[in-house]
Length: 366
Image 1 (cartoon, rainbow, N blue to C red):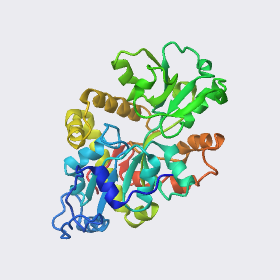
Image 2: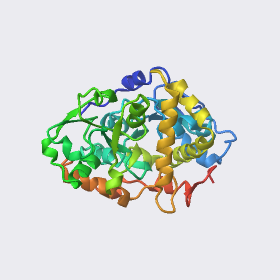
Image 3: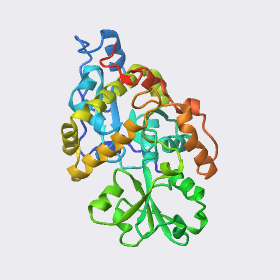
């Protein structure tokens, strides 16, 4: 398991694109202190402003650099529009490296206040490994992960004796799909690969795990005839894009967590009708090139999956233990975790519940 990032390491990841949202309170991140004066907060009362300022600077770590995923685009938009500042929050943005274990460790160590990870499986795996984090919001209630093959593969039994490439860890939803279809997964060679999807058309692997919003459209746009195997089509449940925090920090500063989510979800809705502006924020933050066409498609696909699979009567980010249970069952079945974490402590759905009224986020704060 990777060792936690040091503060200097976290700032190195940021590569000088950290966005500091000036607000009330003193900085806990080592940067210059900001004003502690509470003067005429714009959208909340003095008491709540004081509570939020007591949290200090909230370091946010994205899932993977500045890709236009839900839980990243809206965070960047909330910062750019000053909505965190309006709620007396000071927020710094840092790009993640795609490793959920590293993200969880920076949260547990206090270097990061909120981080984005892949979904319930990542949260559960971190807790099972002894990393004290909790999910404060989960965007997607359907698998965003998918299995990709070339179009010549018409039956997944054809993968027996072949090589399947995955990133970080083999997604349990995909293993469950293969097993449900009667594929002998012991006959498939599973290997870790990087983020270049062309390993599939080049024949280095015969199947590749990927995201519905990323590798699939990228390969098709580049002219490759690929086939997508969606676990949702075979009755396999899943989640994607969870935000995590340390339970000790969230308990000490509940209004800061609530109002971080409040501003973020307000920005999520705003980005639906202001996509160009939201993607422009991402482009400014990106230091590794920004493919506007690909990232717009990523946002469209992911936000569509979120909006199309909301929990009944609830809004974006809402969580329940029942929502996490299917992935916990898969992790245990595949022996990917040694024992089941207590879902009641892992799923901290009270923070989202505090900022929504039915399916609508309450903006501004009461």
